[in-house]
Amino acid sequence: MKLSNQYHQLGQSFSQQTLPSPVAQPILLLWNGPLAQSLSINYSSQKDSELLAQYFSGNQLIDGSTPIAQAYSGHQFGHFNPQLGDGRAHLLGDITDKQGQYWDVQLKGSGTSFFSRQGDGRCALGPALREYMMSEAMFALGVPTTRCLAVVATGEAVYRERALPGAVVTRIATSHIRVGTFQYFAARKDIESLKKLTSFSIGRHFPEIKLASSAEVISDVILPSSQNVIDFFAAVLNKQVALVVSWLRVGFIHGVMNTDNTAISGETIDYGPCAMMNHYHSDTVFSSIDRNARYAFGNQSKIIQWNMARLADCLLPLIDEDEDIALAKITPLLHKFANDLQYRYFEMMVNKLGISELADGDIDLVNDLLGIMSDMKLDYTQSFVTLAANLNQAEVDNVLAMKVAQESAEGAIDDEAEQDKWQQWLSRWYVRIAADISAAKDLMAKTNPLVIPRNHHVEVILASSQTSYQENGDLSDLNKFLAVVQQPYTQLDNTHNYQDTPSDGDENYHTFCGT
Image (cartoon, rainbow, N blue to C red; front, side, top):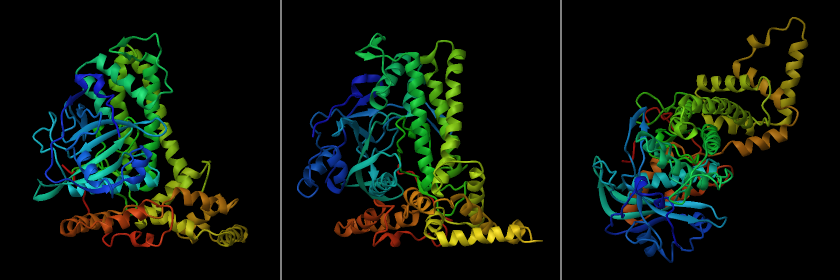
């Protein structure tokens, strides 16, 4: 295993070179074997656990590593902070997979840096285990996400409200460049660094955007043209559409969609205050720090538009020196982004209903169902699973026959008054999918997970795992859970153990920032 660090080569203004702080007694708790294999990391958790614990606690540097803390700014709940940065994380470097794709290797909870802002730079075991569990569940659900390679116990306590066991988590991402990274240089009017950052981002994430060989070059970096910047922004927008629509598909609530937690790669990053929706309600929010529900489930599409507008602000001087001309070029992309988000959302929702293509009347079909689910407090995940499970040709034929009879009966009572809303809606849905019930069931099975990482199970497993680890080093409860959520579209022997809804409906459930 050998690393490089391309981001460090951009220059001193982009990061601070800093070493992880050593820990007392590193022990490898979790090792993501399949992810390691895809990255051509040929270590075994059984054979090489001591060495891996040294590497992924930060006690020993991997060959070629140049650890840095990245600089960035960010709008946090709408308020701009000009200097944030990695206060408890170290980017060790990057590694290439078997397809030649670069991946960042970052330690989280590995000590302080210039950006720590009086924090201790450490991570408690609970949030480390949570990030591993949630990111692996999200990956299996088909949601773009950063992933965890390892969790290492430090043998040291961290202090929050009380003393907690410490841990270091290793995060893998295509990069850790955020909207806040661009804001950092835009706030300082550092146009040269903005150009270098954009060029680097294009090369890392969007190599299909070709930088002209005749373009301006600074420190061996080919700087982007105005059209390159516009193409880059359009590509970032497309990534965000795919990301947020996938969140809405599975009922995920990020909880802290600040611009410093919005990756230009379109990967889910930061699993601190995140949660999964139980019964459907667009205003659902669980984060203890989101007191005004800014990042509620139904607001996520609006917030990603706001965040992308902030990225657009940063790119304007790279598009044209005349701000009005730059705005005229970039504003249509934001309008298209809003339309794409809405279209892709409803396209996804009809897929959840077994409908392959959006047609007239389908938006009303979706919105009416969500209204019923909200009024009846129906579980978001189970509702679609139940619809698919109960879908059969005989039932559809029976309902359609009854509908025809009612419509043709002389003096029949109006169907809208006779049936309850749910039966009315089922009848409309059956009419829509009647042409091919089998295809509808297949599409629903691919789109709707049987199981999600439900909040009450996550909390129980985190509590039991921390206790059992401290008592006897046992993480069997966590591993059983992982085995199920890593196959969310397959009915396994243990799937039913994690499908139940919380007895209190998550009424008093809150998530907290791991710092």
